[in-house]
Length: 155
Image (cartoon, rainbow, N blue to C red; front, side, top):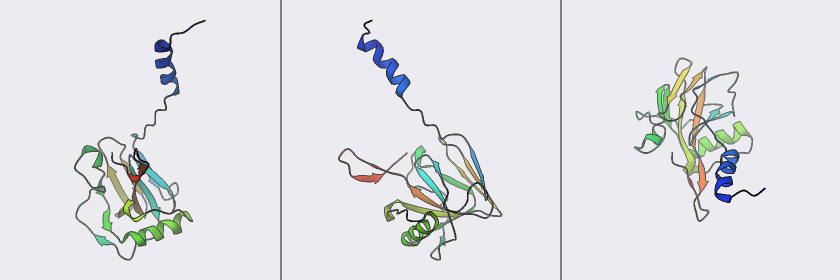
């Protein structure tokens, strides 16, 4: 049996392609999101921290990523958001995850539940709810460019 490449290739690609979808809404409690647990919302990674860093300073901007594109609109609708010294956040992450290292350029803000609730929205990825007394650090996903230089992933 002979099969033409132009006919077979699309079928192979369809069968081999991996479809990763993380646009379903998610909800977490203290029990299923313990300290050190992570969750992804597109290119933003949430990690539960053991405590609020001492350098935490409240901020008015509730957008958790930098930019004005639709992909950068990770917005904390409910909760308190803080800017912290990256070194202190890195130390908290290392403590929570036992030996994971994050470079300072990938450290974002930290947020805290307010009255036991936090809610992060995004127009393309599933909204995420955090229920319980939680402090969560934001880490920007990284990848390699064409020259294999490490860089921040942008939605």
